[in-house]
Length: 160
Image 1 (cartoon, rainbow, N blue to C red):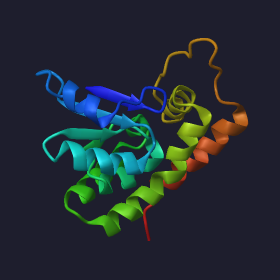
Image 2 (image 1 turned 90 degrees about the vertical axis):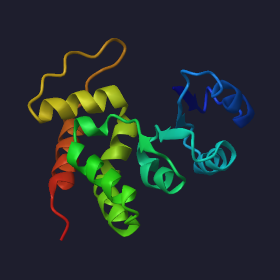
Image 3 (image 1 turned 30 degrees about the vertical axis):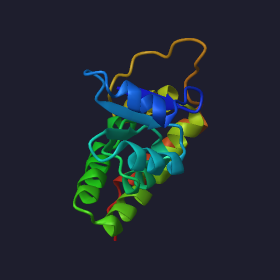
Image 4 (image 1 turned 180 degrees about the horizontal axis):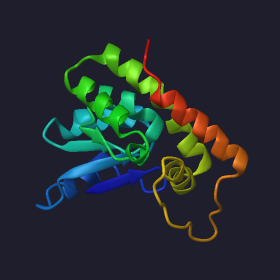
């Protein structure tokens, strides 16, 4: 897999060349640029799998032709993430919007607070042991943890 980020961006021409290597089979697009996702799909074609690596852009990435997403949120809300994938796969974008919006606040929280910190705290809130954070990372504050608890409750609520 090839991973692109803002710091490690690769041109579509370079990606095409790399995809000629037999064991390079997919691209993880993490630049956060939806227009780039559309461009990659157009330039690389439908045969090349690309996956979104930007939490809050999941719905836009699926609309741009992403085959899936590589994020940490399924550790906390696996059902919502699977539901999103299934409705997108069945081309039900109205339902996809509803499911995506249910989890958007959490996806934004994870990004803003730092993935390892937010996921560790979330796992602990669900009763799972999450080990320790390596320095220099610090756990979420008590206030941030309570904010996360509320967000997880929101995610668990049924859509009316």
